[in-house]
Image 1 (cartoon, rainbow, N blue to C red):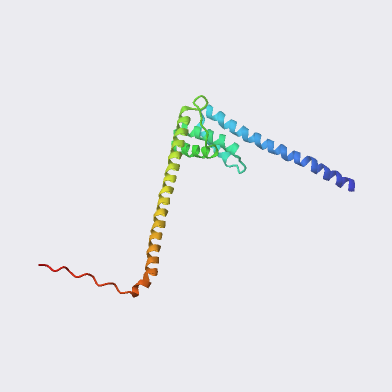
Image 2 (cartoon, rainbow, N blue to C red):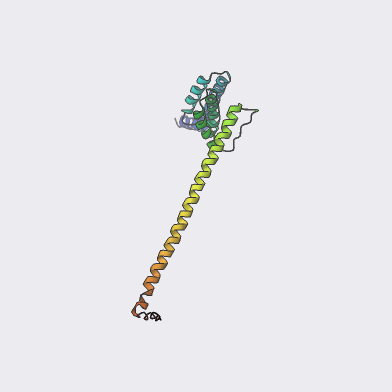
Length: 180
């Protein structure tokens, strides 16, 4: 009986990790097959089917950045082909969040896709510039608040410290000159 338990233990320690690796490889190949099918549907002009396939693919919970990037790319290209520009821009924004330096070329991608990626990058750049400009304004505001506080505190300090001189009466002002 002990030998059977030892054999089962050794078998589980040896073969279960192998099965886990095989299942991960199978999942990766299924993801790859799914994306290849979506890409094939896109190239065949079946844009609605492409969109549906990629949306189904994106509903999986265990997707990595490596899975998301090609899925977003295919989905945005299908949206562009259907002339759904706003959804395509949203997907391209997600694509650029994954890989901010991504720059498609006309040799490898449709010109509309290349153009829209450039446009979205420009919009993101403008948005970041406006956000940083807003930060500069708030920095200036803090400078004004700090300077004003220093002035107010200085004035209060002078008034408080100047109370010692209140006991001395002020000299009489000079008289008015006599007019002839």
